[in-house]
Each structure stands twice: as structure tokens, then as C-alpha cells.
Amino acid sequence: MINTVLGKIKPSQLGITLMHEHIIWDWSGAENTRENLYSLEEVVTTMEPYLLELKKLGCQTLVEATACGSGRDVEVLKACAEKTGLNIITNCGAWDGGKHRGKFIPDEIRNSTIDEISAAWINEFVNGIDGTSIYPGFIKLALGDEGFISELQEKLLRSAARTSLATGLPIECHIGSSKSAIKAVEIIEEENLPYDKFIWLHVDWSNDYTTVYKLVKKGIWVEIDAISAFPEPYEIQINLLEKLICDNLIDRLLISQDAGCYEIGVVKDSKLRSYNNIFTKFIPICKSKGISETVFNKILIKNPAKILNIE
Image 1 (cartoon, rainbow, N blue to C red):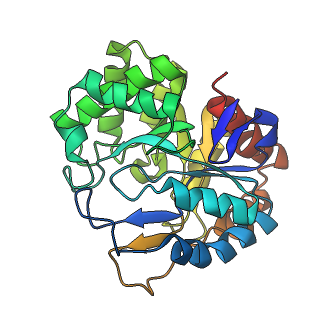
Image 2 (image 1 turned 180 degrees about the vertical axis):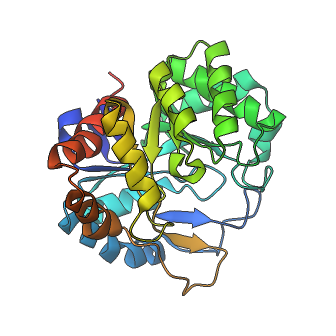
């Protein structure tokens, strides 16, 4: 079964799944108050038409990758799911990407031990997030974008590995550096986490197929998901996809866009990164190059159902 914000569903109910998107994001930092920054109604009213348009294009499930400390709001996600009929999946975890160095890590996480953090995340899985009956469907992390994994980031990764071992939840890990990806896999090996519980996000950022090949052969998952940030004709993404197909590695491949969202802490009229590009631009270009519908059925339907199923 798979946890969505509206309850458990069977893997067969996922349908076409985008594995890494955002509905809401808060740039103000983990310790800033959320009061008076936005209302639930404002976010849902803003995002509903974009989500409905995405659904019309065939998407049935959206994996919402905003972590605690960077704007995760499960009540917003629940309302969006109720309004649109999309399956929406939220997470436990923490985000320390870019050069922000702890800006989005709540103090209660920063000041806790590995096992204390893991216990808190396991509690969300068992008892619900923020006093709700909404449960995480995966663990979200971000680390290593500067080419190294900091002491705080290593603590978060080890906490996530122990949470995954206790719950079965997969880890989605934002990593912009292939050097850091190698180190991250060494850490999960030390924690005895099965490789197939770990997803290296943003492999198209580093565009290092040698490392991708090496780590996928070990058994980890990789995700091509910077489609919203890269221009057409998506040469980097299509080149990676073609190599993975050629090497018979699409059993460990996921795809998404990292698109959206309602952004707090920026100018209100900032342009939303379109949810539609994967369907209206990327897939048609891929098909024009001979990449088959079978491939997309695999990476948009079958693979998400496999990685997200925890029972």
C-alpha cells in the first residue's frame, strides 16, 4: 500500500505518476513564523487550476517533495487533493540543498541526535504529521550540492536510512554533485540500507553518466527531473535516458520535473514553473527520437508503483 494525503491506496491506483513536484515552498527559512504569510484558501485557489490542467494531461499522482522546514503544509496538500482528485503524496525528512547550510532545518532537528531524528520521523509515519491523520509516503532529503556532505547532512542521511529501515519508506535524496552521490551511497552502505530504498534525484544536474551507471548497477534508483529548469530540446535529459535504455537500466529510472509552485518569500507574481512540459514538450520530443510509449509506461507508471509500495 501507499500513503497519500487522503489515505492509503494500492499501487495499481497510482497511474501516471510525477515523482518530484512542488505545490508550496517557503523561502523564509525553517525558524520564521508561518503566521500571516499565507492562507490555505489562497494557496489552494492559486494552485487548483494548474493541478486540474495537469490532471487533464493524464497525470493521476503527484509526489509533493517539499520537506518540513521548507514549507510542507499537509493541510494544503489535502485540500488540493480533495479539490482536484489527484493522488498527492507527502513526506517526512529535511532539505539542506544549495548553499543554504541549515537555513531550512528546524532547530529541533539540528539539535537532535541521529536516533532522535529518526524517532521523530518514524512517529510521523506511525501517528501522523503535525497532529493530523496524514502520513508520509516517502522520506525527502537534500544534501551535497557543494561537492561534499556536511556533518549535519550526514546526520540527516543516517537518520533517514534508519527511518527507512524501520518503516519501509524510500528516500528521495536531492544531490547536485556526483561526488556527493558516491559518498551518500557509502553512508547508506554503512547503515545497511538496501540500495533499492535510495533515489538519487537530479542526475541530469551533474550529467555524469559514468557515476550514474556505477551506482545504478549497485541497485539504487536515479531520477531525471530537471525538465522544468532546462531548455528545449532537453539534450542532457534525452541523452541520459537513451543511455539508460541502451544499458537496460530503466528498471531503476524515475522521471519528473521539479515544477510548481506557490512560493512564499518571493514576489507574488513570480512565474510558476509549468507542470505541463513533460507531457506537452518532453515526451513528444522523445517519441520523435524513437523512444517508445513502453518506456514511458515503465518510468511513469510501473516504476513509481514499485518504489512507493511499502507493504
